[in-house]
Length: 284
Ligand code: NAD
Image (cartoon, rainbow, N blue to C red; front, top):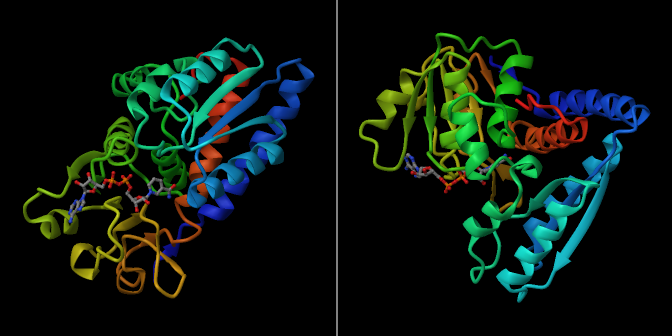
């Protein structure tokens, strides 16, 4: 039976550590706010935004909320970002993605000052990560590194296979695993013989966005399996990209959905905010 990698517990542990750090920073006179911008009223985005604001309240940092109408123009949004860039109290800026179609997502990401880019999506943050320079790390992949480390999973020298090459999960995940000295294979929708590649993984990370895609045939006995996917099934229950019932008996450790990778993303966002408030040069 696989060890369950408990993202809920580990994310709570991180938030409690951050809460103490925030208290200590306040004593040094270091405070600051996270500005959260949502354009439109997408219900899923509203849930994410609410969770982020709750996490700020929990660790003791201020959150500023900007709920903009669906028809907000790109210029209006960029103007707000620039105002927040200039505001000394604002230490982190986050625009909840996706933005409505009439707004260019890349222009929005580029507009956020890299030293307030707590999502880690700005090209400067991504470049810094690629060459091992200080900068904010994207929250989902850095959360997965924390999950592995805090669960006692060794990464160095292991073969890590990642399914998916998106800018927010797959690609940065590959870079971070490389930085931890794993041997990395990144796979995608055009990869040939995906099953055989996955079966050679010591650590398999599924981030392709297809419910229950990874079955027992993809998994080597004793592998560590990380499930990034999140989907709502017809019965309203959540599931991941991994068929947990099939894979769990084979794996040595596995993340559940919900309660695995999901809660880590917000914990790492809070970590980035605390680094920013502390004024850490080394934010990694
Ligand atoms: P995406 O759609 O941007 O990228 C999916 C990637 O998977 C692509 O690179 C594609 O090439 C690859 N892919 C698709 N079908 C494939 C196949 N059959 N075989 C191999 N590769 C295939 O998705 P994303 O934004 O990276 O998100 C992936 C999943 O993770 C989604 O379910 C998303 O909801 C979830 N997610 C969860 C969190 C979290 O905090 N838990 C954060 C981000 C994303």
